[in-house]
View 1 (tube, rainbow, N blue to C red):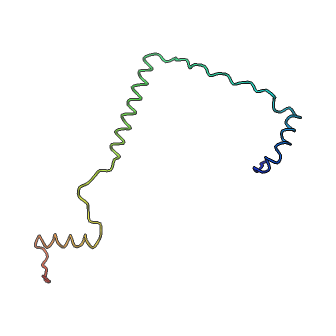
View 2 (tube, rainbow, N blue to C red):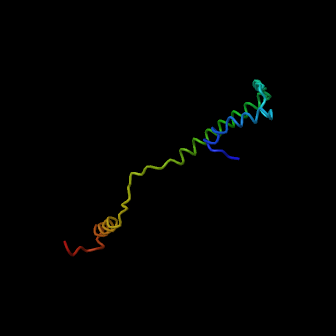
View 3 (cartoon, rainbow, N blue to C red):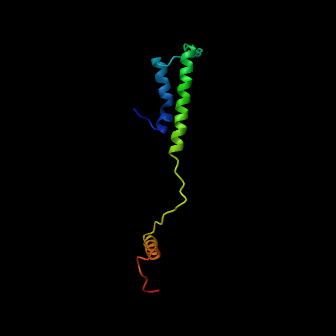
Length: 103
């Protein structure tokens, strides 16, 4: 059964009494065992191999990062269609392929 916040506050005393009657919740909780020191079972050769692998992965991630960088181009293409058409006409006029009769 799901309770809202108000229902939980309203029924908290009843739930505690029910738990005590049923002895569901023990009075004393045993403390958790303290964590033990991890045992190092890796020999020196395995440890060195893991270190080499970690260096390899780290170096590979740096290379991918450099590859994925956007290249900065000095030439910016003209994106507006009218300006692109005018640039093409100017190039044709400079090469002598088009005559400008309005000039």
